[in-house]
Length: 55
Image (cartoon, rainbow, N blue to C red):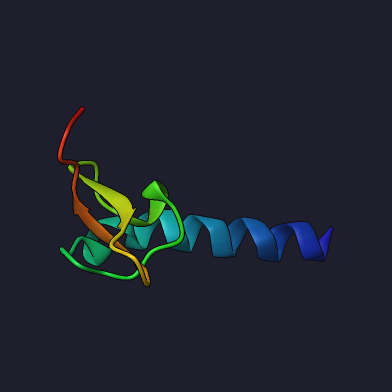
C-alpha cells in the first residue's frame, strides 16, 4: 500500500509540475513531456519539445 501511495504522489507531482516545464527546446521522452502546442521531435541527435510542423 505504501508503494502505491508513493507512486501516486510522484505521479501527481509530475502532473502538477507539467505547465512549469513548458519551454521550447526542452529535452523530452514523449509528447507528454511537452506542452500541448509542442511535440517531442528529434532533429537527429536528441528529442526536444518543438512546434509540430504539421502534415
